[in-house]
Image (tube, one colour):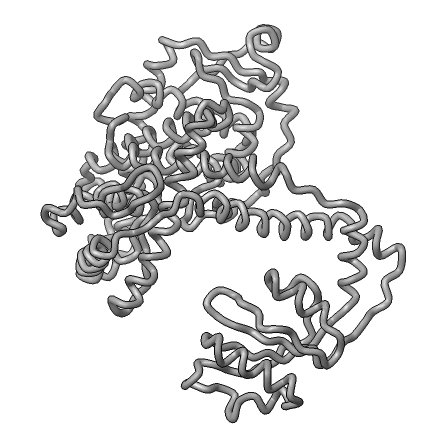
Length: 495
């Protein structure tokens, strides 16, 4: 049992304005508490008289355990934790690069918003031809110029010889198509057709076959102003992000060595397809023990780890270095044959190289010294240490059949549906007891200050009378799942 004592007057003097609690030299801010609380487990909030205080206590307990583990290299150098923090640092640095070079430079004017709202009154129904054969697309455009009907460009809706097909859309509003398709289509007059549009590895021709225009009142422009501001900001940032990546990466003149790529495809494919089904989607969790370490792959690649895999302006990366970058993220490819596996691996390598070079540039600019980045890394480092420690404690606990039977009652036998659940509950209770004893000991060695008045003033969603299912919040924009904020383990709510 922890006794948390605080003095409001002392707290106001000893904590900064945004400091909610100080545990020794560590501080929990209002923002950290609010983020964690909203995403945290219901067991720490539901059916509790003081949910905010209960949740803060759990955060304080984990802070104390983290402080205990920080000087133990067997925890701080645990491979899964080191890898997770390396990935997180890269993620934060790349994110900061996009913030500096894209997000903060985008502006949307009231005139642009007004024009976008007015344009939204238009709905267009279109026909389109798509092919991967540019020469055939140009031939179709010449036939349209000669007066051939759009529907007559192909003998059948799908032509496998030219890898082309004809289709039509429902009525579309501006913004439903990606750029540049949206702008091109909405500039076409009724019955007009476009030039050949290059889009990825395809070539497209549009025809505007029908148009509807709604009446937009002045009040509608005011009503939809904020919504369209967000839409335009998103579109501009997306377009500018693509432009920024191209302008950043092109001067590097990156070239992936063909022999090394084939080597990677063969080795990774063989390893990947031979994994048991349940391991094919490699772990998304930052603290998960199961991994696909690059060293295991290098053993299959024999002596090729030092071979050049990527050449770029000013240097090169070896096979081993490229693997470290590719396997830094959770590795998951859905492929049924080696050819499709190679195509997906090529995409994974492209993303890995983009993030590698952006991280390198961010480090050169000193972004790794940004206090916000350092603080988030610190929070996750502590969370991963504690989570790994709790997992170790659980794995060391042995529950006898007698203990489970006594807990459930004499009528329950091993194999009953409730048996495993009861066994896990008893493990958690034993681990909770161990943790509480450790926290009690640590509390006597450290100064704790809580700003009670500030805690009361924090606005959060208060729990209902019934325990609700946990809602998990994940960070957007990543090719893998990561919790948006570190949260305390539900074990702190067990009694």
